[in-house]
Length: 73
Image: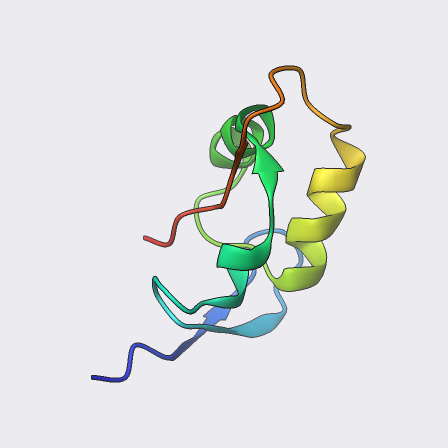
């Protein structure tokens, strides 16, 4: 089954490919728990690769040191 689909970034509106789960590019982006909470509180859906990386950098390195990946809906 092909889980590939096109999504629009909740931050910039760019169209990007989502693989919906294991194997998606977002599984390779490490974020702290603080980053994940911030993203979930500010956006309703996934972010494109550029925005996901930018948000991680803009929000600093986090406070707890635990890294997670942004889950797909």
